[in-house]
Image (cartoon, rainbow over the protein chains, first blue to last red):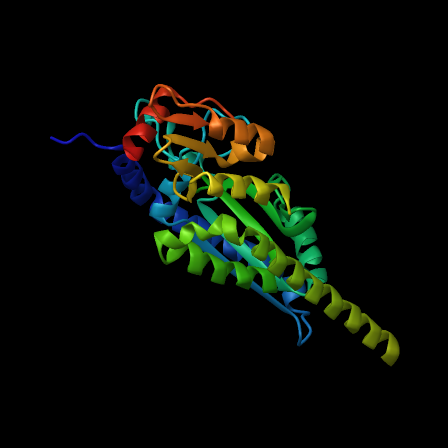
Length: 219
Length: 81
């Protein structure tokens, strides 16, 4: 009989945990939406706030574990992106920090700061791990664990500008999901991606500045 | 030109191409591979030296910031064969 590979074992683990992870995603989404009610009830017509939840796909989770280096205290990527097949016991989906993810898309950015304050009260023991592009913060991100039984899953929530969040969705779908050949574009596209991020942040900053000017003019 | 781009041009010119799944710049003829972390952590001159150093054993040479485990190295060599 062919021996089971690390991938076989991880796929089995994934489908064992999937119902629990799906419940965790629904629970966190609902808890976050409830916590953000003070904002979403008062949104102006030009503002928006959307909460989305997902469970990491099986293939993505296994790929991420391949890139995970259990021996690196800084958590940097595993060079070569391959499993050490002599040590299968060191790989488990429970070590991933983003098996369940919630993304809060908000516009404009002042609402993101308000959402962050409310959610920090609710998730006080979660660790902050903000996303940066150079010196520019792109998103608030927090990591914690949640599960209804003995198994708890790595969960994270992000608060990101709607403009950047939607750009990421398109970028991710185009480059990661479509074709393995496209994945090679990532490092080449890095500078262009940063330029888009900067442009979207500038758009939002200017929009907010103009709103303030308009408010002053009318008061 | 940003430093990172200079390093990547250096590798491109020496026949290396980026492999997304391996997260490495690889040259199958020279049997050498550079991890992204190694490129980030080292100066252009150091990378140039590594590109030009002879690979006398004709076995794969992996340039990484942290040492690879034996099992990882074995698996990577198998995949790159």
